[in-house]
Image 1: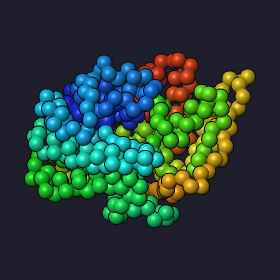
Image 2: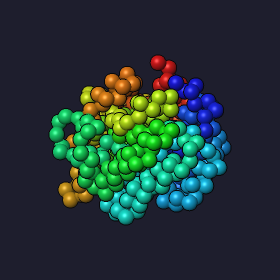
Image 3: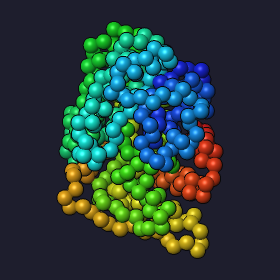
Image 4: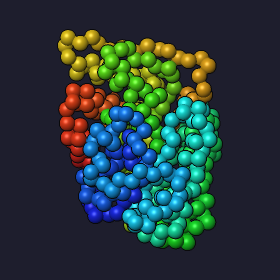
Amino acid sequence: MLEFYKGKRILITGHTGFKGSWLCRILIGAGAEITGYSLEPPTDPNLFEVADVKKHIHHVIGDIRDREHLMKVFEVSKPEIVFHLAAQPIVLDSYKNPVYTYETNVMGTVNICECVRLNSCVKSFLNVTTDKVYKNNEWEWGYRENEPLDGYDPYSNSKSCSELVTHSYINSFYKDMDVAVSTARAGNVIGGGDFANNRIIPDCVRAVEKKQDIIVRNPYSTRPYQHVLEPLKVYLMIAKAQYEDNEVAGFYNVGPDDRDCITTGQLVDIFVDKWNQIANANSKPIKWINKSEVNSPHEANFLKLDCSKIKKVFGWKPRWSVEQAIEKTVEWSKVYLENGNVVDCMNTQIEEFYKH
């Protein structure tokens, strides 16, 4: 599949983030011509710099809220394929700064949709949203693509709005143009190089680095965890398929099988087990502490996706189990903490993932 991307002109928004940096690494290896448009990396340290992405792409610092700047980048780079990943992605941060969250996630989508509308070079456009776009009834079965879009918190709700903006542009403009447009609704991703605040695996790695116990604030919430390479492969698969046949464009859930929808506490148990297996014999075993917060802002407790549609349309199935995903995350984190070659580790994991 990756050979398709050799020489293709690709624009990625949010390329300095965790997912964006992994996507750049995959496409660098595939020989694509990549333009990235994003704010400065959101954390220090960050995967974008650690993975040495900048020198291999056309790197543009820009705000997705700045439509004029974004339009100029489109006019210069003339992308054939656009991946829209730029977002304010943290639920708790959206409670602290709801206006910025809506400006970035809703008006940012309007801006990218408008740039696609006005640049006929674009043949394939994928808007990456989230599994949290659905009205969450906390029920036991997975949400399907035709369920109501009505996220609860400002982050989730802004992504519901992002979906609706995209739907409107499809109905109003894109259906009469030579461009195929889809959205992808992925669950929680894990993997090496995520340094974000208020995310459980980065919290685990930071605790290990500081030789502290892991603090878990929401151990009983169930999430569809998957390795970051899983949804990225799906994004690349959708973008390629609709480039070649716009009939497959649509709205797709991307998540793990039911067996990998586990609680945060179970996730940390696996991390602790994997880390203690590779730790030095004389180091103290790590453990985690339940610090549930009674009055913390609302976050969904139970959420999973029904991925029947994408499996039927594309014959897709997840590659790595949640246990393998954590194993690969621990592997990357150990290389990083020991000042090893992170790029080699990423390239090896990418090669292993695509060898199928």
